[in-house]
Amino acid sequence: MLEVLGELPPGRQAEVLDFVLFLRQRELTLVWDAIGDEQAAALRAEFAEEDLALAEAAMADYLSHLQREDVA
Image (cartoon, rainbow, N blue to C red; front, side, top):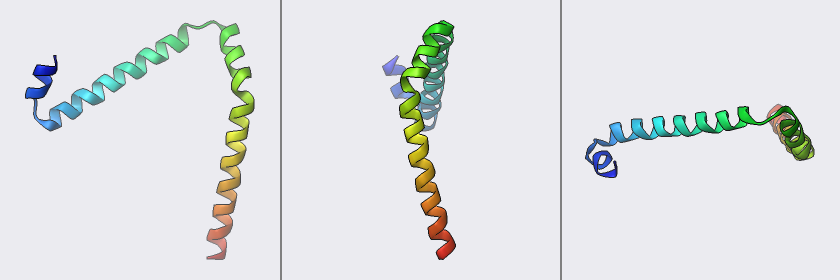
């Protein structure tokens, strides 16, 4: 497979990479969809605090950015 890929022009190699990345993402989605509701709820609960902290930090950064734009 690597030999065949190496023979393709760079533009076609990029297309193959995009397709492979699409397939990997689709596979990850299928795995996520395969977990049960209880497991999904446990994962959401496990990461809820971290997600909230990241969102709050992003909003604080965004607010300060808006305030700097207003002053400029």
